[in-house]
Length: 234
Image (cartoon, rainbow, N blue to C red):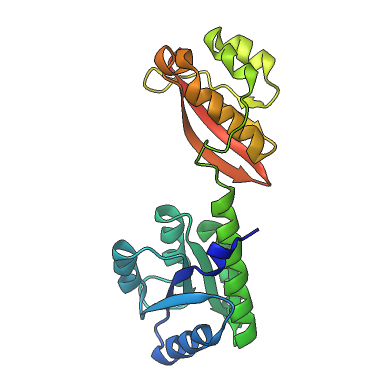
């Protein structure tokens, strides 16, 4: 759930369309809602939007598909690659729908709106995706201060990779090849509390820190599960 701090948050939104009147309408529509607070920026082509993305951090980018130069799908694909946490919404005309759908996987857009759109739907869609973005952010566990106890099995890191894989059913994979002399192990946790316990033990186990130089390389939340990549020196 989104807390009160998130509800009072001011979001940066970038609107991209080559038609000035469309940009004006969208800006007016989003400015009129009391569902969320936002600062709105506009760009009339993909190239200008790319430059703005380099200079400013945006929570959401809403782009028309059919534009001269860089299309909306191409722009949002770049946003996905360079700013993966930014919400991506595509606007497409009915005649472009099949083409846009074929390209959805490239940009991994969070939603698309068809022309002509309904103003209430635009507001509801943007609001829903901003809420989801805030929930994804809150689900990413980056702090260990709230951890109460640690998982004991992590101590088996000190023994061997094999014993670890046999003792913890949450391990997804242990790649055979090491990278830069470091071994990577991928874990799956059912909840944030499980991951918190794991992180606490990893952080505070002296042997893991000093002998194995263990560290968490990556955390992703997928279907309410935590996929965690840990690397260590064998």
